[in-house]
Image (cartoon, rainbow, N blue to C red):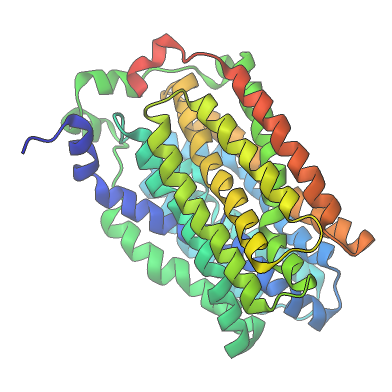
Length: 414
């Protein structure tokens, strides 16, 4: 049976997708993020910190990640993703281990999460999406979706893993157990299988002349910033991710506050993670075939309903449904951003452009959890945060539709 070019592309480069997925599971932008909810209560109770103080560590970490993303984009364009990501995995493990040594000083918490961001900076989405975007052309959307299911896997597994570690070994042991993931799971896999088309030699021997031209075509960062589409995409990300990032790490403590056991809350969080995986794959498949902003608009309307369902008290089934709706869209958002950046701005300076967009996402990832936690500290409830998140999703729907038709000059980048 003769395979089509798109089928051959996926068949030949599936090890890259698998390695990228495992790398994302263990990366600095998801592993600390999805484990912090299970660590919030035991750590704050031991040291007497407020929830907002503890969640501020994510703000600090994400802020540093935002500052470093342009540098990581430049390093990716100059040296390739492989040389960037391997040392960063070791650095992330060091940061997680440092968190296990906290003795009650708040600055040590910030130091540990700062180390995760700085030493693990090469594991942010700029690296992963560049590797996929320059290695897949016929099925880029699906390849991005499959690779980025790593965030959903982490969102599903990390809460249970962290709760189990905490119950068995205490929160210090939990941080140590988390530190083993990047160094023992991700690093060997990446060393042997993470080999994207990131050099001229790779490109000239592995792809067609049309694809080679596509890799070298695209707007510069300055040209992209001067166009309205860049700002439409950025603002859409800003509003949507404020909602996603506020809900994600606060979902587990929110549910336990409403009377769910930690195990039940972790199960709802796992539904959230599973739906991220579903969203990644489904949306990745759809954007290869339909107008991506239209697909994005439909996806971003769904979490508005999910956030509304979390307002007030709810049954386990309602909470699980809400988590699925929100997670599905959260799963779509990251690969949509990567797909749209490549489709509207080209590949020549993709990492630099994407790094600025990611910086916005990183700031949201840091500020929103703390804002949600501050609302809780002031009102004793997360309900107001859920109501605001629902509105933010709807604003993002309107913005994403303003991107318009795909630019014809980058037709070969897809």
